[in-house]
Every structure is written in C-alpha cells, then in structure tokens.
Image 1 (tube, rainbow, N blue to C red):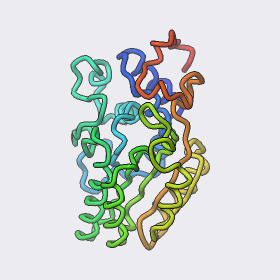
Image 2 (image 1 turned 90 degrees about the vertical axis):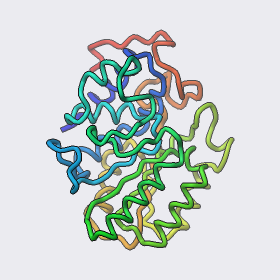
Image 3 (image 1 turned 135 degrees about the vertical axis):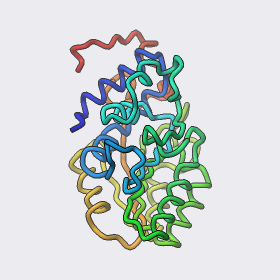
Length: 263
C-alpha cells in the first residue's frame, strides 16, 4: 500500500537531489495518483505489459515526479533511474513512453495525452475489452484545442471506459490560468455541457476522490466521465504553494534543506 506522505517526501527528495524543477506541478496531483494506484487501477506488478491492465495516460507530462516515485515503489521503474535522474537516466523531465516501466505515452508536448487516451478507449471498445483508460490533464493544458476535438470523439462514441481528470491548480508555467484562457469556473461549465458524468471535488481529499472513482470504476455510465479536481500547486511545501515562480524551480534554490525526519 502506497503511503501518501512517504510518496510526497520521496517526490520532494527526487527534485532536491537531482536539482530538477517541475516539482510544484508534481505535488498537485499526488493524492490523485496515489489513490488511483492503491485502490482502483488494474495492473500486474509482475508484468508491466499485461494486456488486461488499465491504462493511465499522464498528459501533464511535466508534472511526473510523483508518478516516477510511485512506479518505482511498485517495482516497475528501477531505482537506478531515479538515482540518475537528470544525470544520464532514461527518464526525463517530461514523460517518454516506456512500456517496460508502464509509462504508456510520451506527453512532454501538451495536448497530446487526451487524444491518445481517447484512441485507447475506443480501441478497447472495438475489441469488446473491459480495460479502463484514465487521463490526467492540467487545467492550463485544456487551452489546447486538440483536447476538445478528443472530447467530441469521446462523446460521439460514448466512451464510458474513459475517465478524464483535470488537475485544476489554477496556474500554468509563469501565469495564472485565468490570465491566459478560461478561468476554472468557466472551464468546468464548458466540460459540464458534454453528455458526460461530471464531478467537481477537492483533489486532495481522499474521501472525495474515492467517492468519485467508485462512480467510474464500480458503476456503469452512459458516456465518458470528467473529474474536475481543485488542487494546490506545490501542495505540501508552504513556500511553493500557489506560487507562480515555482512552476520550474527546485526548492533548494530557496535554501530549502530536506531532512530525514521530514518523512
């Protein structure tokens, strides 16, 4: 069983030891990822390529540090890849597909993950397979038009095996989402207009996450599902929370020292 605070500590440690940025966007989706892997996603720890596995497409590929830590904890990602992160490792600051590690798609370029996930979900439906597809998308990333083309297809083909999770931390790169495109209330209204199962929750509440995941994984739906998660960028480090400048900034640049008793 993955422990959320242990995953948070190891995610922060990965950034501090490698001097890698993009820690803040990795922390906003930590509870989402941990809850999915603990209780809902179907996967085989002995076979990363098991055809019966559910697919997780992590579209906001720049916020992948907690994802890497979880894959390592589960035995998919070798420890040497984390040890050498940013120093010769095959894993990068943004996700590169590696099916041996159960990394399903390359998503460094935003707006590609959801179209890939829709294709996967449609393929499973065409083959009468029961696999679920979960796609985690950033709220700033939802400014990419490719995402709405993908949602139109998901709606047309009634992809009830697809769950789209919006990591809505209100910030993108060096701006507020609302200063560049739709505000999150506006974006949620747009998404609610689709014939989908829509929920808006606190993305750091395990209770709310489980209630919403239960509705997707354990109940039947008529079409795809959208889970709009209000989150905090940099969650768990006070000086990074909701900080625009920390989109790509390692906490050691602020004099932060990670102590073993922080575990």
